[in-house]
Length: 422
Image (cartoon, one colour):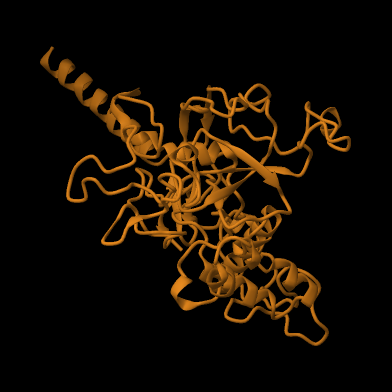
């Protein structure tokens, strides 16, 4: 009897060990194994004929990118609707994980773009990409120094770029995608050299098919290699709201949250409530009529106009200036009824689907809404605190620009995230 019990015990233990071992060897996206689990055929080694499976350590974060873990949240305004637009009523949505720039795109970043496209694009294209520095001009205000100096003077190099339209911001995203992936291709690709420059404008005759101070574009690397990262783009309005609220900082047990957030930080006050910097402003904004920074010697936010992109404390996702400094373009087309016509998973309004522009009759001046109105978020140095709440939203023509709107880029998260940044 004892032998039987011992035998059964050993058999059970053996099955448990065997099961544990088999579980440990199950294929994953990061470790698919050396053989096909459905055919048993061995995957071909690099340089050999046959079906090859490239090694993959997960999608790395792009330069300046922060991983934003997705989830459910209540999208919409939490403040009183002082403008009576009723265009962002609360609704529950889920946003998939994605990446976002930890800072706004700065003057130095945009000047790199201008320089790069200047090497192989037409003069017309480069001129079309230049920020409008006259957005600072005001007949009743002495802003001449910003018109002349803000974009190019070294003292402003790490301040957010402004005077950039929605279209220009999108072009920057396309250029950034090409440059970063060209660098990855050159570093990890097969080294093939194919003629061609970045896909921007028309190349000048005789110009080198490369971008100065940027990697040479080498031919498209197959997506199966995992070398290229997804394209940079403007964040959707839902992604931007989710990242700004950063509700991960309000959790206390399981899926419970202790509070909602009016701003990217806890509480309804604009000053830091405790700690070493108690009493300091949490963002750069206009405190009241004629008050852009407070008094000399004790300025309330130390910034009369914009401030450097790493100013003020980041939110719980590690993102800087998601309230104040400059407003930021998002991808979405503006519609007042977006809160009604939406998908509750990764919502976006990319077109006038089910809400056509002709219904608004802009041609006869019965509305300002058309298919060129784009949403911007976040509040700016020239806005009162109301607009710093992530739930507020405004719109502007995609060809227009102001001294209060900048942007940052986002990127989808594909499969497991890598452990390193580029």
